Length: 105
Image (cartoon, rainbow, N blue to C red; front, side, top):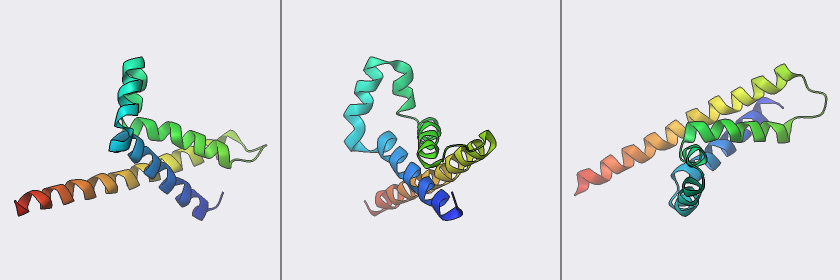
């Protein structure tokens, strides 16, 4: 996995995690999961928590057989870290746009 792949995976993880944890289209899904299991409900409502697991799955799809545990671990952490930076930027942009929208009223 080269740097470009790493960034693409991080963007995908950040986008997917933000959509699931914050998107209105997944609101019913989050409520259903929370009603079924409190811990799982917390997982699908927490961007930081869910991104760790999505990063793990993303790295599993990218790794080739015979890779070392060190290679695998550093890529999971790299994707997780980059995706959280991306999500922080997305959340900040929404907060900033909401604040600006409130000033117009």
